[in-house]
Image (tube, rainbow, N blue to C red; front, side):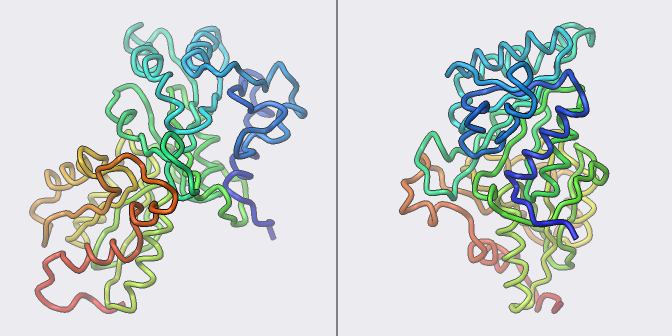
Length: 331
């Protein structure tokens, strides 16, 4: 029986196994060395692999990504950490203008196998600059893979797959799930890097979500069962590219969909999901696709964040507004 491991612990194991498996892998960022990172995701790696493989960088995010680009051009596979979501914005020019475009710019001759790890999202009592959900900045940029994990097992798998990918990967880690525990088997097989997964089968509504709100959607599914709703929950995992096949198959089957995320609704990731599903599943839909999101405001102070973050009650309220002509299925 495997012992329960937290998401932070699973990511730590994934980095350790990736460093073990490939001498080209290096890990660096702010305080990722002896301290082990703010969330201890790199705890013990500097002592285990030495300062040539794991080291602290200056407090300069643009320099971190720029340095990683140079290393990757010369054969290394860097994994860098942005300490908090909004701390990555100074590196945005390097990410969008160079990391994302080098492969196309060189007609495929230069690849950049770099993983940019970014702790993101709220739910930890943090303040602005520490709780942003910045996924759409990256998903809107062609040339990047953007993924996020919801559980320790999938965090381990996704990070190993990201390090092995020949493409640059933005790896978003939901901070409020860092301490979620479950037994993991450190398996890399299973859904591929670009694939979504159905984590809760259901018949009435497809709830599409990712990262920190997957567990929220599963809670809504548990509560909704008592109200007669049989919810199917899809964890997207890969935000870019988007797994049309898995998601459209679910929506065509249920005929109704709700998209859930923490980020603001206006021009948020859910808008793209709703548009894609409307284009591909229009004749299967029994109701408009609804979104449950964070509000269109800067991230609120800690005492108010529970109003901002989607919860099971708001998800079930959206489900109840999906133009039911009769009683939904009873699971």
